[in-house]
Image 1: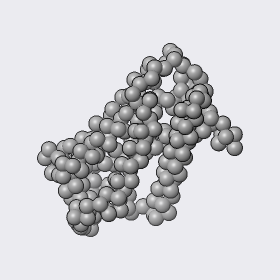
Image 2: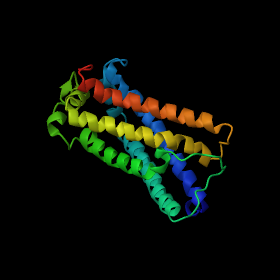
Image 3: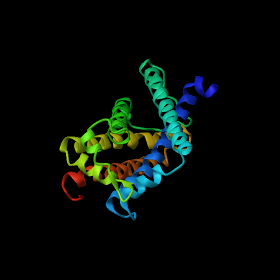
Image 4: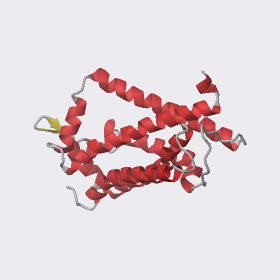
Length: 224
C-alpha cells in the first residue's frame, strides 16, 4: 500500500508500467513491420497467427495492457497535479537533469497518445472508423486480408498523416520517458545519465522511424 500512497512509490509504478508498454511497442513494431515482406505470408500471416491464439490468452493479454495503461495514466495525472502544486518531484537517485520540451510536456504528449490509441483501436481493431476500408478484410486463401485494409487506409493522406504525426508524439514521450525510468528506479547518476539519455532517445527514434515508415511508404506508393 505504501507504493500507492507515497509519491516515489507511485512514480515507480508509473515507470514500470510505462516500460512494459514500451516493450509492447517494440514487439508490436516487429509484427507490423512484416508488411514489408520479411515474414513469409507478410502481415496477413502475422495477423492470422495472432487471431489463432486461444481466446483466454488474447483476452488476458489485452486486459493486462489495459491495466498497465490505466495505472500509468492515473499516476501520471496525480503526479502532474502534485508537481504543479509545488510538491518536489522525487526520484530514487537525484541527478542533474536539464528540462527539455519533451520532459515539460509529458502530460500533453501522453494525452495525445491516449487519444490516438482510442482512434487506432476503433480504426483497425474494432473497424468502426472507415468501414469502407475495413470491408476490404475479406479472406485471401482463408486468411483475413489485413494488408488490403492497411494499404487502403494509408492511401488516404489525412489518415496517413494522423498516424505519422502520432508517432512523432510517441517519440517525444519516449525520448524522456525511457531515460526517466532509470532515474526513477535509482539506476542512474551524473556519470551514466548522458549515456542513458542518448540510448533512450535512440530507442524512441527507432520506434518513430519504424512505425512512421509504414503509413508513409504506402502514402507515397513505395509499398502497394
